[in-house]
Image 1: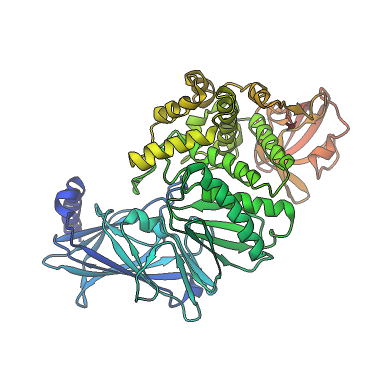
Image 2: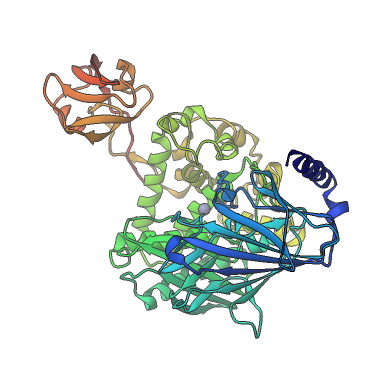
Length: 580
Ligand SMILES: [Zn+2]
């Protein structure tokens, strides 16, 4: 056993050191068959038929992350019972890394690999199967031969007995039902599947065929959705001058809880929605924003992209300092392009921008992390929130959207209205995606923007992208004749500065805001507040409502079960609430 392992380890080191020389077998063909014999167990069966093997050993891998979501998810943790066979003879399989398997293939040219994927994590990044449907998030479904990411494959889906429909943006193979072609693994991993009895809505915008597939009931109105989405898509396409996709698929998952998560793909996107959000005007606006956001990514993020984001390394983190462009600019354009449809009043748009500015200014982590750092560390910070995250990190979605707004105003001002940020985005899309077929570097995005601002942005970058200086937002808003008004100006309300949750009639602290009243008095996360000034407390804000900044209150608490008391000097609530 040990000796065999040593042999595989030797071979593994050999093939990973020289992957191209040993594994370059252009005639390899790969066919996957995905089936769901018992979806109620959340098990997905995958059969991978590989032919054209010309080495004594096949190294198989599974990605550890899914592009668009910057977290190591270790998809291989859900793989079970992986076996390999040739003409009904079992072949030796050894696990050589957390996401790698070595199959011993001496003098063998064809192998059948079989494995099970447990899929019960409901999100846009993970696969899911139950009796009602299956959603395949492909990096967690398909293992691939190491070093062969450019190899084409075929995927054949066998739906569960009463499931009627297989939806994916992969090209169907004519004549073979539920069979699809992936020209390479980058495309396969970026083309999720929805399989079940989903509602299907087809529409066309200019030269692109759109399909919306909806899992889960909901109070949606198909005609209204198509009409409104068409306008959003038209406004977005005008910015870049073309839609590079002939076909685009929206996969919608309707659930009970209020949500609005999404994940962009090359020519599709997956969004999680609340099934009752389509009739309330505010919630319907959120629905359109989520759809606009994911759709805008087909340009910004999937094609116009930082150089680190494609082609991808699926084995590890892919670091970039530009997620504030990928996500922040997309957040800005989600609001802006929905506003351009004129489906809602411009006041709604100004309210969204105001809320975003207030959010950015109120972040307690703002002095401690720049936009570039927040992007780079997304893997260990934004996607791994803990009780101290708000104190030490910023949100590059919101702050990046603010930067996009400032640059848009700057360009309009500097060019006397001849250009706006749209023109810079289109210029860089044409240059890096269409002409050079690669991502941009940090400097290239900056110099591309400078062509339209007509001024050097090095100080802007130093202060606001790589630095943490407060931004004079009014300076930019003034270009459009606007200014910020703080509705909290002149207020003198006491500030507790904690987040709590009820526990056995008391309040447990879940987050402490840095430098707040309770923070300075020495209270901690996980302390259980049992009273204020010797009275029970069920609502902290209500308990200090009649106090003023400067007042001192006595707080009784339990820490790890032991009683403690604190004297808390209340500070003034420092938050802004702007309107433009
Ligand atoms: Zn996004």
